[in-house]
Length: 148
Length: 148
DNA sequence: GTACGACTTCAAGTCGACTTGAGGTCAAGC
DNA sequence: GCTTGACCTCAAGTCGACTTGAAGTCGTAC
Image 1: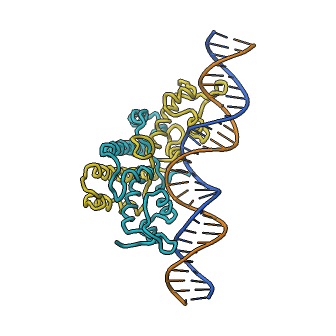
Image 2: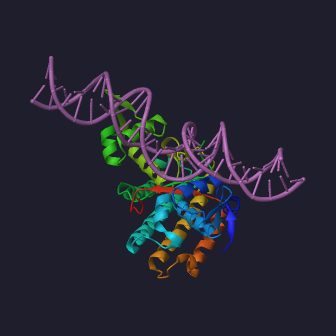
Image 3: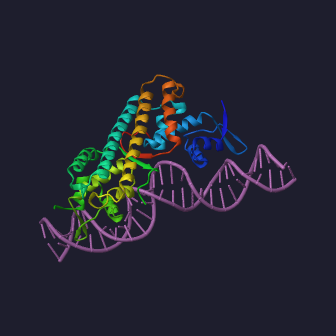
């Protein structure tokens, strides 16, 4: 299998070297040897990095990702836990849809105060039910910034 | 309108007092007065908190939420930015679906190494395209733990 | 054989969203 | 009028996921 040094892995995966070192440090990926001091990886690592990115994108912590897909993608986790996780994701998708609708509503509704708009309140009611029984939280970064 | 002290707000919303104080500090919510030292809020705040929770659940930072829904839910943000954000959410939902499918696959596929399973690789390929052009990252906490 | 540049280590810093802790205050109930 | 318990303030701590910086090490090209 092809061997890549860290710089190449960084470039191809878009993950900076410092992050790759960090991932190795916490055992998420392994370099197979050194060339001088320089870490070298099997090309395989690229796939694993996609997996990691996917997991992060979907809101998992690195330790969760690590547990989800053990050595070469084999999970160390009971199947029903995985399914539970999948169901969580399902729920998160519903939340996203809710917020998306709320946002679209806010973008289009001419009402002066949304808290008084019945449509909006209906959206929030739906939320309420989900939020009181906390199921899953998400945090994101990057992309079409609204803040600052 | 009904007045609640902080303890009651905390209890009804599930948001701890320390967090409520923090939210007030950063201007996300306002207490209308004090009873002694004790903060008091209009019942309205509960709706606003649902909104905040919804935003957080969907992966927004508090400042983003603050900007999305300003005073009493009126947005301070141009409509097309809101729509862009809604589209982001759409994309995030796709990511979630991808991961959900990957997870279900891992739960059900009997193959020894998923990295060699064609179905799985296909899922990852789809990911690759999304991940290289970073659009939105998510992080979550709570609920059906896999890690630790 | 030496300069270069890309790596290396290790410690410390950063950011968001809170929590924790110490020490203080206050309204209500007895 | 005193105790109680829930609040208060303010500073500092925490956690995850990195990044940054200083000081050092190599292989390669010239």
